[in-house]
Length: 191
Image (cartoon, rainbow, N blue to C red; front, side):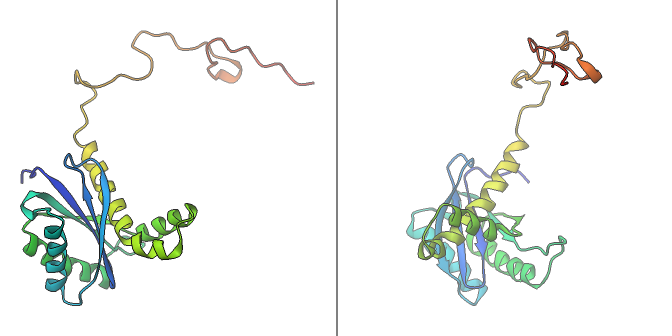
């Protein structure tokens, strides 16, 4: 399936709140967007997300896709939480009419909470932004992985060569066969 152009919506669905993030127009950078209180019914929760997008004048038709954090178990298997998220994601896909992408969200909220504490963000503010920041973290991971697939091949004209060019002589070997840095003096033995 050919990829649609546009922005991506990142979703970190929780039992109480749903964190939302949006990519920039070039789908390279994820930004925290909003946090909404989670409706119990999946269809109502999906409609709520659509309403938030519409209120911000982000048309669903302009989205390239929705990236949903899937809460896998630590061993990588899916449990009840992952099944609940998949049901919600299906409702999102039907409501928004855009393709779904799932990313592993294990410990993403924990990582964001740790970062917010390190930055001395007040607790009340942490509660307000943690879900949308987690959604941005998930979305950025997806965008980064997606971007790696479009990097130029190593033998293309666009690729940037790093390191020595073919034919460059290696640095002379020092004691024990290790290479020495160019211009480095040999070490003196300790007595």
